[in-house]
Length: 85
Image (cartoon, one colour):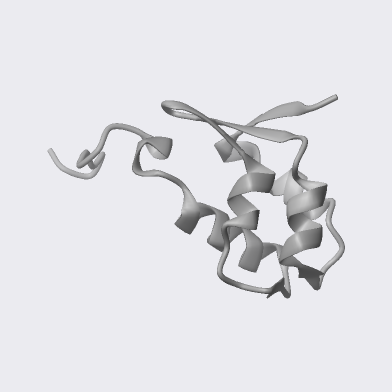
């Protein structure tokens, strides 16, 4: 059975993996995780599978790659910054 995880709670999911880990192994182990985004959902395993890297040496490496692969709508309204006022 799959699980849904909000994007801001992705760390516990990635901490479950044993590092270093290959892209394929990480994608397989994350295939049951649906990331709940600001606008929509993405399968974590599919995102990891799209990575250009062959291996992740740490959770931080994998987390950075996932954030880089997310579509623009994942974190909120396009072109909006909370720092502008």
